[in-house]
Amino acid sequence: MKTLFLSAILFLTLITTQSYSQETEQKKGVEIPVGMESIKAGNAVIIVPKGTRVNDTGGLIALESINEYSARKFMEIEDRLSKIEAEQEELKKKIQGFTNK
Image (cartoon, rainbow, N blue to C red; front, side, top):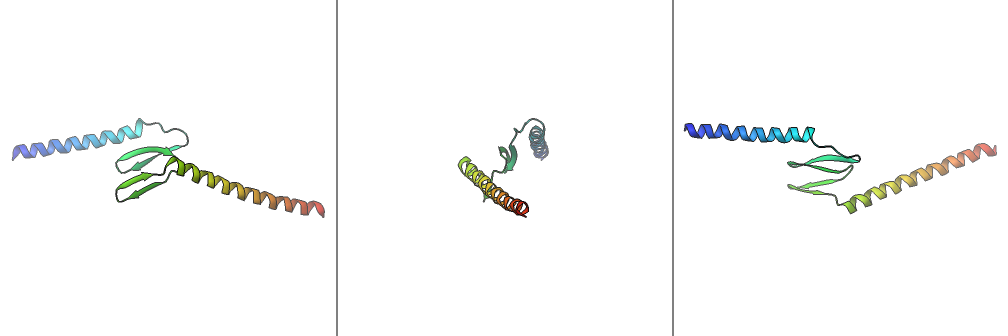
């Protein structure tokens, strides 16, 4: 009984020490490059481009592929550019209205 108790204490001490060392390593040792972010996926910390989508379905964690990420970002940029061009045309019409008066 005494050995079981000592074994349990030793086991709990080892688990606590291991989890503590993983947390401190993550906090101090990893430098995240510009344009990247760290995502906690399950027990792992993954460094991915900012805005990457993570799909978590029933314990299976799947990151968005680089092709999907690039296509989605490109489409977002095209949408923003279209809106900017529309606003620019609207401003041109307003300016022409002021100059024609």
